[in-house]
Amino acid sequence: MILDTIEAISTRFSCRAFNGKLPPDEDLDVIAKAAAASPSGMNRQSWRIIVLKNKELLADLEAEGMKNLAAYPDKGIYERIMSRGGKLYYNAPCMMIIPIGVSAPGGAELFDCGIVAENIALSSAALGINSLICGLSAFSFSGERGMEFKTRLGFPEAYEIGIAVLLGYAENPDGKPHEPDVSKISWIV
Image (cartoon, rainbow, N blue to C red; front, side, top):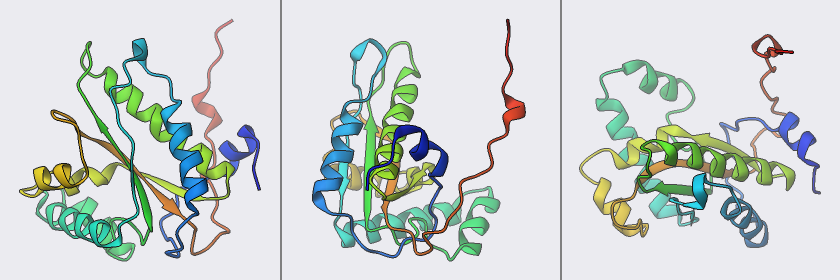
């Protein structure tokens, strides 16, 4: 099943309960190539795409992320994750990690990273694969084991975590997207 772009955008939801079933490699390859096709400012492409399917490494990243999140001064984030089952990665069997390098002007790499993440989310939705753009993945890299994980994952030198996108199939496939707030739209004519 392949959805058209508008349908993928309007039906996609942030999955926070995966059933653990791994998407086929053929689909993950399509998604990774869609991510690599992302535009970037001045075509710098100061990002990489790492497809992580290794369960042990995913569990290790999650445990470190939860440890670092528990030590974070804002306890609200930790408590919210705990209220959702205490899993930072929600039982996702796959993660696409987007490390980024610094661009000039500074901060441009963040825009490019967001475009890559959106291409992953939309291409996975088009293929019937659920996703969650996971900003909290940064906590897995923020502690004393951050450099170890960057090495194990093959981050290029001087690259940092941009964001990760969790991929898999929803435990409850009837998840609903958020209601768009059209009051945020204005027209200047």
